[in-house]
Length: 358
Image 1 (cartoon, one colour):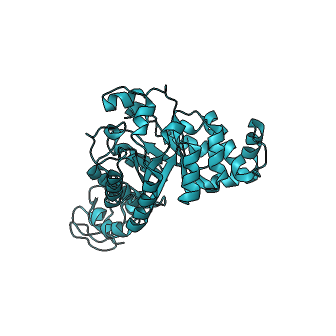
Image 2: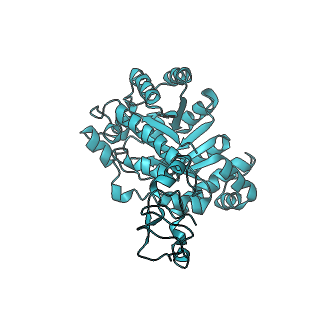
Image 3: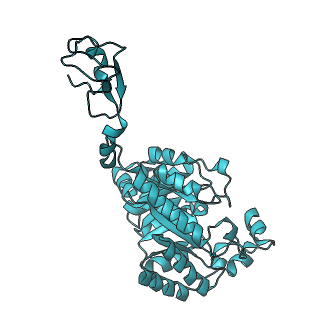
């Protein structure tokens, strides 16, 4: 199964349309399937008093409000249209995460996106989650900072949005009923991918807990992937080996650039290496059936051993531990016959080193 690789440009364009186009080029060059941005109106997203996260202050080297920071990182709707056209030209899928209702409406009704991403920070924002589900789009749901109850609650909202008439009145009980219904479960399985995520930048290795992907699959029966915020490329590659169907990873043109996410992002060569290694792991995962492969068959006779005469054995002489041994090649009698041969006499004369063939 081919892993969907999302190159997360996010806001690493620093508000520059020119940089955004260069990020698309880097994602294409790396072999990513999707390049993803973030769509928001800063005024709709945060209050004037909302503070930066600690990692944002550390990465930017200065403290300011989220509103000040995000206002510089907006891309215009016109720029989005140009980026979408450029992505089509370059044959890479364009995706973006909406952080407010106006932006969500723009992505769905103007850009006509068929897949949406619900970020970790919005998973408890039930009205916004419901808006996503009511679009009917496929949803990628990131689960950073969540416990299983948070995820189940969000999936209830999504099931309700997918299956209930828009005039239906939302409520916690209605969400639970939708989640428990066969039609709700069917819609979730067809349209939702859960992403395990550790929402720290960079994420400490001891807090990654890749085994959670197994838990998500077992608890919810949905396709599961991994949104990675660790340094380097080892962990997303490991996630693919553990069965991730989707990998999302931040990237930048230069980690030394000013901005909240650059320091926790891959540079273009690293992104290429990650994609190359993921594709190698996919090939290596192969099948779960254990059998000699095409390449192995020709090596069996070379590597395996046969029963051989360890000294000259005369016709009629009994086989013994002293005159019987095992050596390569494996073209003769299998050593599994050793104990049976010890009960027999030689049917012909064997020279030292000759394969036993009776």
